[in-house]
Length: 191
Length: 254
Image (cartoon, rainbow over all chains, first blue to last red; front, side, top):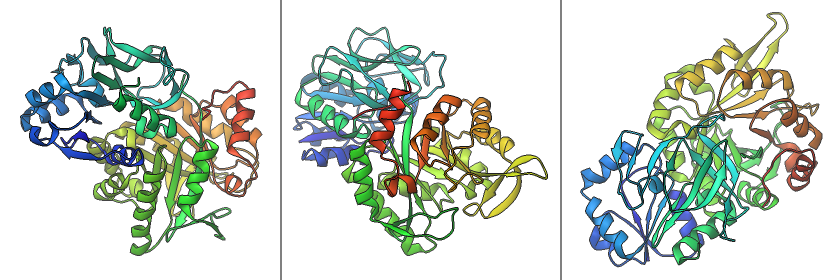
């Protein structure tokens, strides 16, 4: 059973679709009671970092998320990946602090957001050389947990991983069959 | 680096795919979900569905088409046609669309662009613009209603205004080129591209693979869109991408 954190931020229909395609059962909830028996937790999210953390605190689920992240495979996607870090310039807010580093506005000579298909570089054969779909304006910095990057006038951390904590900056659920497989590998611990 | 995108466009009426030549004389070419699957397998980078239904039933069928498509394939899906309000946009995104394209409604009420980009993020708000050159005025003007009605809005001014209101992308159709298959409107597209720092999807005029090569060599636009040449298999996306790659243009291979 996969638990998707429900905090009404961004559209999660396509994450649900990808899980259905992979034939996972899932539950959408913000209640610890529902999530504590899940095998893996997905933290999705699109939008503004400051607003997201505010919503998490308004729901009073920050401690629950940290408790889940202690034992379970905990996967942040897009903004959900950024929330894993200590803090962000976007909204000048503190994150969950599960990974060291901060989120800063992307500095590149190219247009921001970094939008479209870009190629991953990684030691992991599941990720290396694959084209995946990005949409974001902020990125992780000063982090030691990067396992895949993409080049966009700046080296963009694309996948971060430390023990059971995984962050995916791009949208695996929008990156074709390859992306759906990456989501599966993240859930199964294959990255 | 970011890849140049190839986007097939499916005109959908009452839940079925149709494509007009110069926007008149529509002709059925199939089931949208089946066509979408074919394009996904061929390596399309994104799909655009334009709902040209005039009835509520048609719009409801479109929602079903989006749901079925989003459950089947996992590439970005943009929906346009008949979108007037923030609630319309919410309904489409909830059904599984990743972006919406707003055309006439933005001209009636330009604040819709601002409102929608604030609520959903500008990354999912694409503004579609149909442009046509007026030889008397010696300038490009915005057209509405599938290109049939001329407005007094100058195209370049409109593009700048949409960008400042929070548009996340443009889908620009050159009416003079659309359906003629003689190539994209390079001059207009490159001028538009230099004006704004926002991705542009170029539409109108593609008749063969070389037209896409020319588009990406002579302009900085992000994507090329076409319909009938893909539907009729005059150009196959896989071969098109091989051609582009051989010309030194970075494209995505699956």
